[in-house]
Picture 1: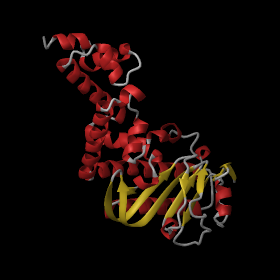
Picture 2: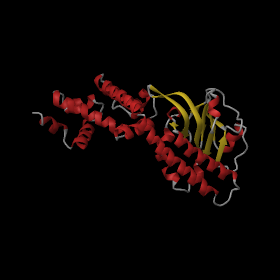
Picture 3: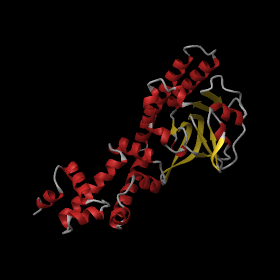
Picture 4: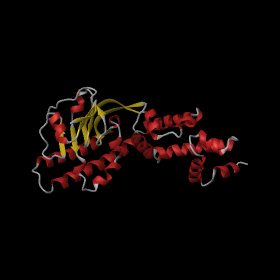
Length: 305
């Protein structure tokens, strides 16, 4: 264990973390499962910044109260999953509920020679913030609980030549179910998602109308997610599920709509419109416009003559 900076604790391997939490050494150096309901752990100091060089999947059997999503809140009682990728910094709290349920830790080297290593970055929820946890229905919770029990059983067996194959397949199955359940969550939170999309639309409208784009350039995914108080990956995945496109494509659609309005109702030149929308070079604007509309900006304008 060593600090990344003066304020961040960095755990390089699972054994270091288990030692800090006052847990037994893992039976396998690259994977460990902690059942917080069965053991006592040494908590981190409140507001301590922590980073780990491995993956973590936390399964809580009970979440209670309001959870914040963007500018809104969602009432929920039930189990849930949260995901961390290597070197993702989190801040500890004094919430005792942080040490309930299961936590599965596995090092990238554990899956390195398996197909999962090539696709794990496609699971966007590893880039979500902790507040964007996956909340499970009763049926879903039973499925996840069964998977964690299977992993626990395998880890409690004597390690043999098949242990790693079995565990990697169980992790793969856990991630596939998580992907399915996250998609369900996006669908069932239609009201909250629509509210967030409305806020996104207002942000973009203000960005263009107040000439922020002229001063700061094109609106970025990072800027918009910060304004909405969600992670960039969560915003893109939510938009893909709800609106059929990621955040970058959504920005482009709004840019083109704004450009069409200005081309058809003003005498601004193509260059003036491009700069006003945040493009550094008018040629880049014209190329994007033609890609999206199959017409050049000037040809589109002439259709209104």
